[in-house]
Image 1 (cartoon, helix red, strand yellow):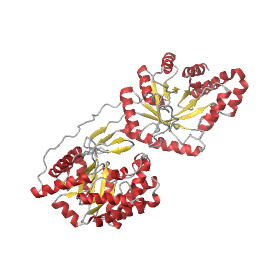
Image 2 (cartoon, helix red, strand yellow; image 1 turned 90 degrees about the vertical axis):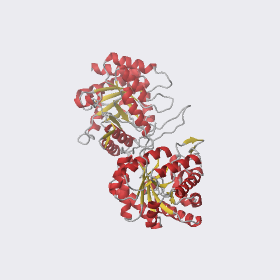
Image 3 (tube, one colour; image 1 turned 30 degrees about the vertical axis):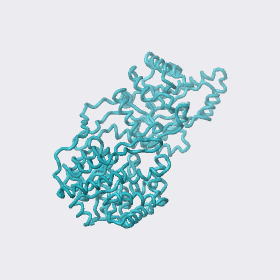
Image 4 (cartoon, rainbow, N blue to C red; image 1 turned 180 degrees about the vertical axis):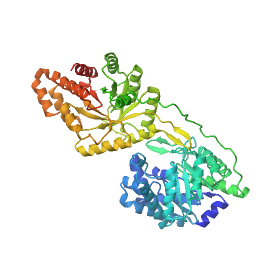
Length: 626
């Protein structure tokens, strides 16, 4: 649309502010998924609400309004249960904006908002390039067919994805103006690692956009600093649409700072001084801020029609260089796997409360006995138990290697990655076992809710990407480090083939080894092992569970998911009478001894009998005498 481009080249346009955060204020307190669903479904159920928001910005003086279609990719709508309404949601959004323009009584341009694809894809197996391109192209085609004047690609933090989006929307139209906006961190870097100046050069060279800018991110001041960096890498017109600073969760709602008109007036003037040709807002901004920006733009036009030259410096972003460092050696566990040395591990459970004398005594005995190579720490499972990574760090200080369990149940992906990084550096943790984790039971201190942002495969993929490190433009943004990643294998899964397919997916995601659920007879392991031979080439550690009674065996079969005590073992325990514990411990010791003698498994881990970890050492002692 030549009128739009001429307007950008000849002066400064005012864009609108937030849509989603304003809609959210009118919706009931909802979980994130329900809220994401509602923010798009509102185009169908309450178009009058969206239209009133557009009208508010038009009245405030906006020259450009954006459709309520951010995050409306076909795949994301399908995940939100809106697949059948995908085209209607996009079409209605344009109609609502056009109706608002008609009702507003003044000309405005309508920008079709397109955001990054479903972020969950980052941790799923990535779809093909063509599939991702179709996602962008479909959105662009519908928006253009319904009458938008330009496309606004916004809040992209991965440069490769933004380049793909530009290429995709150009398949829908070679002529439509495209505004491409990126979201940066406090270092002036994209999540994919590129600095703003380099990203600007790359986007400019792509030759598919007419305006380049920054939006959302860390608020007005940080965005101004990024804008200056962008200006060094491009001669394209610039845009800036910051959020209203850091949000806070108050009373179940996400609220943004109510920034003063003076603050936004100063921001708009600084943005113009830096060369911005489109100025607006993102999350948390309202018509009040846009009205202030409008006033500042009009005053500047009256007093100084020609835009001032861009200053050489404006603000400083956080400088943080991650130096290259000598690669750490692989973990002791990985070295044992590579050397084909049999691994003996004892599994312990985190204790309740702030004191754990039980496991401290166990570790002391382990160190004295020399029978165990590794301590494997179960996940907490409840807010009142100690964290497995922190327990592992403490045990590492005592001189024995650990294998803490981590689960997507207990934290967001970014939170778990942060914990693992801290545990690696400060605690010496070099191994983790990724499990799904039983659903949380809750207790007096925590509600029975899990996070489950991804499944175990997604978490393995995230950890693998983390440990591989990242280098962008010959600059290290994350040094690689040798983290050994294990996964669970449930030989008793209801669908055995599906479980093996999941194991394959875990290996493809980056798993280094697997640990089975407990076996009770060596012959059962040999039989199951046939399913793995020739198909999987990773070390497998076998679980062993010393049983103390026939009653315990029955209780396990009834109540412990994924564990099955064979009928033959139950019968032997029942027939043993008062010596049933001797039989249970003897079977576990026999399993350990035969596994090590045959080397049919990479190692064994022993589940503490009846939550008594000291007694697990008795089983290793028995096995050593066989």
